[in-house]
Length: 527
Image (cartoon, rainbow, N blue to C red):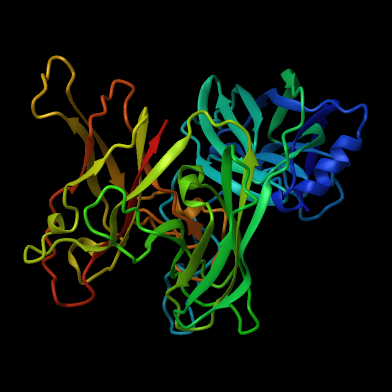
């Protein structure tokens, strides 16, 4: 077992920690704590000295645990650099993630290391920071700041509770290295403890420097089940009709939860494209013709893990206008082997949002072939003009794009080829005055490439899970690229959306499956 040196600082605190599906029970327990004080935010500071990489002497890292009951010091599986524990939030600082070495031949005599547990295939710096909730790692990033210096560094941790989750900020010597949300957690009494893995790491001055209290508990969410352990195999498409009549009139946040679990036939062996969608009657109010076919909107995109299950959470508040009346949902995974048990739910947190989404309009959807001059990608991503709803004050383009296809396509496109892209949002009045602000356009660039695949919390897996990819990772959700209109944006009657890829030509056309970008994009209007 790892040598654990504990520096314990105990405080009477309350904070976030439990699964959203058990939220009602835990809320009742919290209310029963007559003397309890619920924290809206907690700030923790500490000083840490981690030796330089060649002087670690086997040390693994350090961590902080915010928890509700006794520290599991006798738990052989608990380790401070990966602080997983039920009913707790942990922040781990990992200084030991070496690349694969001494690789053994597989059953065919190949020495690849693709399918083994070590993930740092590219030998990137071993200074990782992870956020854990309820016994599961949620976030893992490569720190922009080197903390293995042999000198004392100041570490700050800020956690602020919000309906549906908690905002986590981690800083090292004043530089922010984590700024993200964890969803599906709720407040409860906790204590704060820090510790290390290895004798060469030192911690001092761990303390709570500031905290604020909630005046009232946040209301429990309205929970809506869409699929409950529904078996999906043979590239089938699950269907479910859902009634949203119980959703409150004012909703501050909507959190989607997806779980893939093992069916009786066993897990599929491969990473497969997966999607959850909702069908909505077509809005005929702005057209001269009538359409009877419902419009499908993607709610949650994911890629299955290699031979294991997982649970993911995603903020889908932007799509709130779609969740009304009775709607049909579908779930699809492109698997032809074994399969998955699929569970999917939505939690609606009552409250007043910072801004209210009033309309969601479809932009592009489908597979866009890239690199083929005879089938230009521009024909797929055509400029789209949409009407602006009355009362609009801002808008956001929400776009999910993942690259698929590989060698002998040129540059191993599209799964293993990075590419730059540009999204432009413009509003114009042809008879207006540019200087008067009747015309405005904004563009944003983005690199469709994911270099933190090896840090995916769903690890290790039974396949090539550790390689950089074009906007996705095996065993992970696909977070949309979100582009908001600037404050200065002036809305006219219409808004125009344009999307373009940097130049690429596939010299291997016809030799294998064409490289393509699997696309689903919408624009959301707010008041």
